[in-house]
Length: 244
Length: 163
Image 1: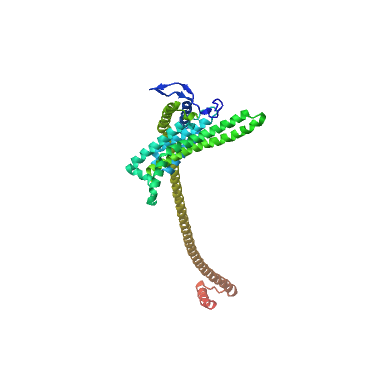
Image 2 (image 1 turned 60 degrees about the vertical axis):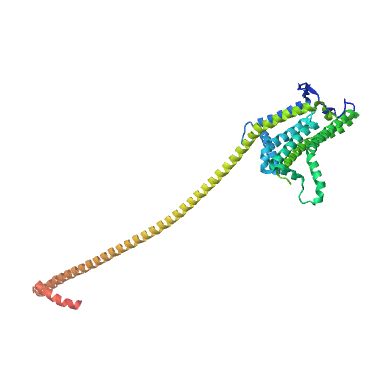
């Protein structure tokens, strides 16, 4: 593939400043820059809009409150009262993925959620945290999670490995889902953008119209994937409390 | 695919850890407590208003009850007063009527007495007149001078036949 006009070129990482620490390359890249923008947008928005702490909220404050209530509701619906402790984490995760996806929708802006290493790291944090939580809550009995009650005994040799594999593949499914959605969406946009340029005469407006529609779809997906990431995290936390 | 190029894996993980940790700590310690206080404040305000509204409603109901009580009391009192006044008036009227009756009776009896007295007076006068006329008449006709006592006696005896 010619690197110059490949639709995957947008995912390439360019270092902005080269930093090395203990022999590792930890350059500040366009990916890091997108993360910085994301974190700044979230922290500034959530801080400044609630700055007045008014009882009758402004529109902007209402957005912050809606976000807060949205995740609080999600957590209490799936986990119940135990979930309150994990609210800051789930909220951070949701906001980070959501705003990361949205920042990626800005033209020429890098989408860090389209990188498997980033999503896998986030999913691993969830997976490892939930596993530790499960052992803290149930000790060695946590392994009964893989034992499905009410199934004929001869099915267990088959079911237990399936359960173990499905449990272990959670971080992979969680990260690949987000990564693949972002990758596919942005690639598609890029492909059609290429058509706009390469098609003769005025026919370029057709793929352009398609891009407009796709952009709306991608914004929906950006929200949806953040929501899915958050709700699956909630469900995993719930599993760590209530085994089957 | 650039995603599978491990060249920047460490860099990505490092900055992800830095930014996500910062975001998590910042939201946990600063932003979320702020929003929580605002929501709590609002809930408190709503609860406060609701409870004060309830209180006011109770007070209003109490006042209404008081007003009704007072209206009933006033009604009873006016009824009582009206009855009392009617009774007093009736008594007054009857006492006045009786005193009038008495007065009238007295006046009637007085008048009767006076009538009787004047009748007697008249009778006496009539006697005197009769005496005088008789004297004059007898004097003119017979030249006999009759004394008053004799005439009176005669008249007294005759009087029984008039009556």
